[in-house]
Length: 222
Ligand SMILES: *[C@@H]1O[C@H](CO)[C@@H](O)[C@H](O)[C@H]1NC(C)=O
Ligand SMILES: *[C@@H]1O[C@H](CO)[C@@H](O)[C@H](O)[C@H]1NC(C)=O
Ligand SMILES: *[C@@H]1O[C@H](CO)[C@@H](O)[C@H](O)[C@H]1NC(C)=O
Ligand SMILES: *[C@@H]1O[C@H](CO)[C@@H](O)[C@H](O)[C@H]1NC(C)=O
Ligand SMILES: *[C@@H]1O[C@H](CO)[C@@H](O)[C@H](O)[C@H]1NC(C)=O
Ligand SMILES: *[C@@H]1O[C@H](CO)[C@@H](O)[C@H](O)[C@H]1NC(C)=O
Image 1 (cartoon, rainbow, N blue to C red):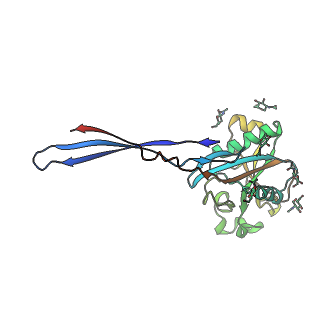
Image 2 (cartoon, rainbow, N blue to C red):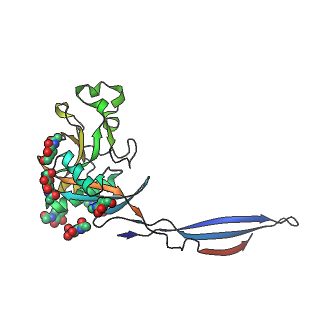
Image 3 (cartoon, helix red, strand yellow):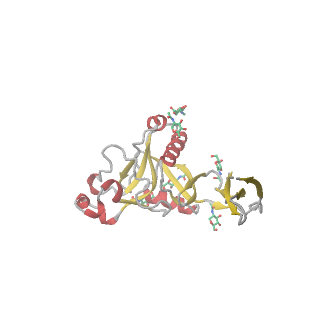
Protein backbone atom coordinates (compact mmCIF):
# COMPACT_ATOMS: atom_id res chain seq x y z
CA UNK A 1 0.00 0.00 0.00
CA UNK A 2 1.30 3.44 -0.83
CA UNK A 3 0.48 6.41 1.36
CA UNK A 4 0.91 9.85 -0.04
CA UNK A 5 0.91 12.95 2.09
CA UNK A 6 1.22 16.40 0.71
CA UNK A 7 1.49 19.44 2.92
CA UNK A 8 1.20 23.11 2.08
CA UNK A 9 3.28 25.59 3.97
CA UNK A 10 2.74 29.31 3.61
CA UNK A 11 5.25 31.95 4.68
CA UNK A 12 4.49 35.64 4.99
CA UNK A 13 7.56 37.54 3.87
CA UNK A 14 7.73 41.31 4.41
CA UNK A 15 10.09 43.93 3.05
CA UNK A 16 10.38 47.42 4.52
CA UNK A 17 10.76 50.33 2.12
CA UNK A 18 13.34 52.86 3.25
CA UNK A 19 11.51 55.76 1.55
CA UNK A 20 7.99 55.22 2.85
CA UNK A 21 5.99 53.99 5.80
CA UNK A 22 4.80 51.02 3.74
CA UNK A 23 5.89 47.47 3.95
CA UNK A 24 5.40 45.03 1.14
CA UNK A 25 4.40 41.59 2.20
CA UNK A 26 3.93 38.54 0.09
CA UNK A 27 2.67 35.10 0.82
CA UNK A 28 5.03 32.46 -0.39
CA UNK A 29 3.46 29.04 -0.68
CA UNK A 30 5.86 26.22 -0.95
CA UNK A 31 4.17 23.02 -1.97
CA UNK A 32 6.27 19.99 -1.39
CA UNK A 33 5.82 16.29 -0.98
CA UNK A 34 6.92 14.98 2.40
CA UNK A 35 8.41 11.50 2.41
CA UNK A 36 6.11 8.71 1.31
CA UNK A 37 6.17 5.47 3.23
CA UNK A 38 5.27 2.01 2.15
CA UNK A 39 4.45 -1.16 4.08
CA UNK A 40 5.03 -4.74 2.90
CA UNK A 41 1.98 -6.60 1.58
CA UNK A 42 -0.70 -7.23 4.23
CA UNK A 43 0.75 -4.74 6.74
CA UNK A 44 -1.07 -1.55 7.70
CA UNK A 45 0.74 1.75 8.16
CA UNK A 46 0.54 3.87 11.31
CA UNK A 47 2.12 7.27 11.71
CA UNK A 48 4.03 7.31 14.95
CA UNK A 49 5.90 10.10 16.68
CA UNK A 50 9.15 8.34 15.77
CA UNK A 51 8.16 7.64 12.15
CA UNK A 52 5.92 5.46 10.02
CA UNK A 53 5.38 1.91 11.28
CA UNK A 54 3.75 -1.20 9.80
CA UNK A 55 1.66 -3.74 11.73
CA UNK A 56 0.21 -7.11 10.73
CA UNK A 57 -1.80 -9.52 12.89
CA UNK A 58 -1.21 -13.26 12.55
CA UNK A 59 -3.70 -15.87 13.68
CA UNK A 60 -2.15 -18.83 15.51
CA UNK A 61 -3.77 -20.35 18.58
CA UNK A 62 -0.72 -22.36 19.67
CA UNK A 63 1.95 -19.69 20.09
CA UNK A 64 3.59 -18.64 23.32
CA UNK A 65 5.40 -15.29 23.52
CA UNK A 66 8.77 -16.71 22.46
CA UNK A 67 7.52 -18.52 19.38
CA UNK A 68 5.38 -15.51 18.39
CA UNK A 69 8.54 -13.38 18.57
CA UNK A 70 10.57 -15.84 16.50
CA UNK A 71 7.81 -16.07 13.90
CA UNK A 72 7.89 -12.27 13.56
CA UNK A 73 11.69 -12.28 13.34
CA UNK A 74 11.58 -14.96 10.64
CA UNK A 75 9.74 -12.48 8.40
CA UNK A 76 12.12 -9.60 9.22
CA UNK A 77 9.72 -8.02 11.71
CA UNK A 78 9.40 -8.14 15.48
CA UNK A 79 6.51 -8.18 17.94
CA UNK A 80 4.81 -4.80 17.66
CA UNK A 81 4.53 -2.25 20.41
CA UNK A 82 1.36 -0.14 20.66
CA UNK A 83 1.61 3.62 20.66
CA UNK A 84 -2.05 4.51 21.01
CA UNK A 85 -5.63 3.30 21.01
CA UNK A 86 -5.87 3.30 17.19
CA UNK A 87 -3.17 0.67 16.98
CA UNK A 88 -4.73 -1.42 19.75
CA UNK A 89 -8.13 -1.14 18.05
CA UNK A 90 -6.61 -2.24 14.73
CA UNK A 91 -4.95 -5.30 16.31
CA UNK A 92 -8.18 -6.25 18.04
CA UNK A 93 -10.38 -5.84 15.00
CA UNK A 94 -7.95 -7.82 12.84
CA UNK A 95 -7.69 -10.64 15.35
CA UNK A 96 -11.48 -10.72 15.69
CA UNK A 97 -11.84 -10.99 11.93
CA UNK A 98 -9.21 -13.74 11.72
CA UNK A 99 -10.61 -15.68 14.67
CA UNK A 100 -14.27 -15.21 13.66
CA UNK A 101 -14.96 -13.37 16.88
CA UNK A 102 -13.46 -15.85 19.31
CA UNK A 103 -12.09 -14.08 22.40
CA UNK A 104 -8.44 -14.43 23.32
CA UNK A 105 -5.04 -12.91 23.74
CA UNK A 106 -2.83 -11.37 21.07
CA UNK A 107 0.89 -11.16 21.87
CA UNK A 108 2.48 -7.76 21.43
CA UNK A 109 6.06 -6.61 22.00
CA UNK A 110 6.01 -5.65 25.64
CA UNK A 111 7.89 -7.15 28.58
CA UNK A 112 8.13 -6.62 32.30
CA UNK A 113 11.39 -4.92 33.21
CA UNK A 114 13.61 -7.45 34.93
CA UNK A 115 13.96 -5.24 38.02
CA UNK A 116 10.18 -5.65 38.39
CA UNK A 117 10.10 -9.47 38.30
CA UNK A 118 8.74 -11.54 41.14
CA UNK A 119 6.61 -10.63 44.10
CA UNK A 120 8.69 -7.66 45.21
CA UNK A 121 7.70 -5.43 42.32
CA UNK A 122 5.03 -3.63 44.36
CA UNK A 123 7.66 -2.60 46.90
CA UNK A 124 10.25 -1.54 44.33
CA UNK A 125 10.18 2.21 43.82
CA UNK A 126 11.67 1.77 40.31
CA UNK A 127 8.44 -0.04 39.27
CA UNK A 128 6.03 2.71 40.41
CA UNK A 129 3.51 3.46 39.12
CA UNK A 130 3.13 -0.22 38.30
CA UNK A 131 0.94 0.36 35.23
CA UNK A 132 3.54 2.46 33.45
CA UNK A 133 6.98 1.81 34.89
CA UNK A 134 6.95 -2.01 35.24
CA UNK A 135 7.11 -2.64 31.49
CA UNK A 136 8.87 -1.59 28.31
CA UNK A 137 8.31 -1.93 24.56
CA UNK A 138 10.73 -4.34 22.94
CA UNK A 139 10.70 -2.99 19.37
CA UNK A 140 12.20 0.35 20.39
CA UNK A 141 9.69 2.28 18.27
CA UNK A 142 7.51 3.51 21.12
CA UNK A 143 9.31 5.27 23.90
CA UNK A 144 8.89 5.34 27.64
CA UNK A 145 5.43 4.97 29.10
CA UNK A 146 3.53 5.82 25.89
CA UNK A 147 0.89 3.19 25.06
CA UNK A 148 0.58 1.79 28.58
CA UNK A 149 -2.82 3.40 29.10
CA UNK A 150 -5.28 0.62 28.22
CA UNK A 151 -5.11 -1.91 31.04
CA UNK A 152 -8.06 -4.18 31.77
CA UNK A 153 -9.55 -3.71 35.24
CA UNK A 154 -7.25 -5.18 37.88
CA UNK A 155 -4.34 -5.51 35.44
CA UNK A 156 -1.42 -5.83 35.49
CA UNK A 157 -1.67 -8.26 38.40
CA UNK A 158 1.50 -10.35 37.91
CA UNK A 159 -0.52 -13.37 38.99
CA UNK A 160 1.70 -15.94 40.73
CA UNK A 161 4.48 -13.38 40.16
CA UNK A 162 5.33 -14.88 36.75
CA UNK A 163 3.44 -12.69 34.26
CA UNK A 164 6.28 -11.00 32.41
CA UNK A 165 4.84 -10.72 28.86
CA UNK A 166 2.13 -8.44 27.46
CA UNK A 167 -0.90 -9.21 25.33
CA UNK A 168 -4.05 -7.45 24.19
CA UNK A 169 -7.28 -9.19 25.13
CA UNK A 170 -9.37 -9.43 22.03
CA UNK A 171 -13.14 -9.79 22.24
CA UNK A 172 -15.86 -8.88 19.78
CA UNK A 173 -17.46 -6.89 22.61
CA UNK A 174 -14.43 -4.74 23.37
CA UNK A 175 -13.88 -4.27 19.68
CA UNK A 176 -17.43 -3.23 18.77
CA UNK A 177 -17.92 -1.01 21.84
CA UNK A 178 -14.44 0.52 21.64
CA UNK A 179 -13.59 -0.49 25.17
CA UNK A 180 -10.18 0.78 26.24
CA UNK A 181 -9.70 -2.09 28.74
CA UNK A 182 -7.41 -4.18 26.61
CA UNK A 183 -3.97 -4.78 27.98
CA UNK A 184 -2.82 -7.53 30.35
CA UNK A 185 0.28 -9.25 31.61
CA UNK A 186 0.51 -12.99 30.94
CA UNK A 187 2.84 -15.86 31.63
CA UNK A 188 5.18 -15.94 28.61
CA UNK A 189 4.80 -19.71 28.13
CA UNK A 190 1.03 -19.42 27.92
CA UNK A 191 -0.77 -20.74 24.84
CA UNK A 192 -4.20 -21.25 26.41
CA UNK A 193 -6.83 -18.93 24.91
CA UNK A 194 -4.36 -17.14 22.68
CA UNK A 195 -5.39 -16.06 19.17
CA UNK A 196 -2.08 -14.97 17.69
CA UNK A 197 0.34 -12.11 17.65
CA UNK A 198 1.02 -8.72 16.07
CA UNK A 199 4.25 -8.24 14.11
CA UNK A 200 5.63 -4.78 13.38
CA UNK A 201 8.43 -3.15 11.44
CA UNK A 202 9.35 0.35 10.33
CA UNK A 203 7.87 1.46 7.02
CA UNK A 204 10.10 1.85 3.99
CA UNK A 205 10.81 5.26 2.55
CA UNK A 206 9.72 5.41 -1.08
CA UNK A 207 12.08 6.98 -3.60
CA UNK A 208 11.68 10.71 -3.99
CA UNK A 209 9.63 11.57 -7.08
CA UNK A 210 11.51 14.83 -7.75
CA UNK A 211 8.39 16.98 -7.31
CA UNK A 212 9.36 18.41 -3.98
CA UNK A 213 10.31 21.87 -5.18
CA UNK A 214 7.08 22.91 -6.89
CA UNK A 215 6.87 26.58 -6.23
CA UNK A 216 4.08 29.06 -6.21
CA UNK A 217 3.85 32.72 -5.32
CA UNK A 218 1.33 35.45 -4.98
CA UNK A 219 1.72 39.03 -3.92
CA UNK A 220 -0.17 41.21 -1.50
CA UNK A 221 0.62 44.78 -0.71
CA UNK A 222 -0.20 45.91 2.79
C1 LIG B 1 -1.64 -11.55 2.13
O1 LIG B 1 -2.89 -12.03 2.60
C2 LIG B 1 -3.57 -12.84 1.67
C3 LIG B 1 -4.95 -13.14 2.26
O2 LIG B 1 -4.84 -13.69 3.53
C4 LIG B 1 -2.75 -14.10 1.40
O3 LIG B 1 -3.39 -14.91 0.47
C5 LIG B 1 -1.37 -13.68 0.87
O4 LIG B 1 -0.55 -14.84 0.72
C6 LIG B 1 -0.70 -12.72 1.82
N1 LIG B 1 0.54 -12.23 1.21
C7 LIG B 1 1.67 -12.08 1.91
C8 LIG B 1 2.88 -11.61 1.16
O5 LIG B 1 1.73 -12.28 3.12
C1 LIG C 1 1.69 -21.73 14.79
O1 LIG C 1 2.60 -21.78 15.86
C2 LIG C 1 3.17 -23.09 16.05
C3 LIG C 1 3.94 -23.08 17.36
O2 LIG C 1 4.87 -22.06 17.40
C4 LIG C 1 4.01 -23.41 14.83
O3 LIG C 1 4.59 -24.69 14.97
C5 LIG C 1 3.13 -23.37 13.59
O4 LIG C 1 3.89 -23.54 12.44
C6 LIG C 1 2.39 -22.05 13.50
N1 LIG C 1 1.38 -22.11 12.44
C7 LIG C 1 1.33 -21.23 11.45
C8 LIG C 1 0.22 -21.40 10.49
O5 LIG C 1 2.13 -20.32 11.34
C1 LIG D 1 13.93 -11.02 5.02
O1 LIG D 1 15.19 -10.48 4.67
C2 LIG D 1 16.00 -11.37 3.90
C3 LIG D 1 17.36 -10.75 3.73
O2 LIG D 1 17.29 -9.43 3.30
C4 LIG D 1 15.29 -11.64 2.56
O3 LIG D 1 16.04 -12.55 1.79
C5 LIG D 1 13.90 -12.22 2.83
O4 LIG D 1 13.20 -12.37 1.61
C6 LIG D 1 13.11 -11.33 3.76
N1 LIG D 1 11.85 -11.99 4.11
C7 LIG D 1 10.68 -11.39 4.08
C8 LIG D 1 9.48 -12.20 4.45
O5 LIG D 1 10.55 -10.22 3.76
C1 LIG E 1 -18.05 -10.48 14.40
O1 LIG E 1 -18.59 -9.42 15.17
C2 LIG E 1 -18.86 -8.24 14.39
C3 LIG E 1 -19.26 -7.11 15.34
O2 LIG E 1 -20.20 -7.54 16.27
C4 LIG E 1 -19.92 -8.59 13.34
O3 LIG E 1 -20.17 -7.45 12.54
C5 LIG E 1 -19.41 -9.73 12.46
O4 LIG E 1 -20.41 -10.12 11.56
C6 LIG E 1 -19.00 -10.93 13.31
N1 LIG E 1 -18.36 -11.90 12.44
C7 LIG E 1 -18.57 -13.21 12.55
C8 LIG E 1 -17.81 -14.09 11.61
O5 LIG E 1 -19.35 -13.68 13.37
C1 LIG F 1 -14.54 2.47 17.27
O1 LIG F 1 -13.37 3.17 16.85
C2 LIG F 1 -13.12 3.02 15.47
C3 LIG F 1 -11.74 3.64 15.20
O2 LIG F 1 -11.59 4.84 15.86
C4 LIG F 1 -14.26 3.63 14.67
O3 LIG F 1 -14.00 3.45 13.29
C5 LIG F 1 -15.54 2.92 15.05
O4 LIG F 1 -16.63 3.53 14.39
C6 LIG F 1 -15.78 2.96 16.53
N1 LIG F 1 -16.93 2.11 16.87
C7 LIG F 1 -17.84 2.43 17.78
C8 LIG F 1 -18.93 1.43 18.04
O5 LIG F 1 -17.81 3.48 18.41
C1 LIG G 1 7.26 -21.86 23.46
O1 LIG G 1 6.84 -22.72 22.44
C2 LIG G 1 7.93 -23.35 21.79
C3 LIG G 1 7.35 -24.06 20.56
O2 LIG G 1 6.19 -24.76 20.88
C4 LIG G 1 8.63 -24.26 22.78
O3 LIG G 1 9.71 -24.93 22.15
C5 LIG G 1 9.15 -23.42 23.93
O4 LIG G 1 9.73 -24.26 24.93
C6 LIG G 1 8.04 -22.61 24.53
N1 LIG G 1 8.62 -21.62 25.43
C7 LIG G 1 8.12 -21.38 26.64
C8 LIG G 1 8.81 -20.34 27.46
O5 LIG G 1 7.16 -21.98 27.07
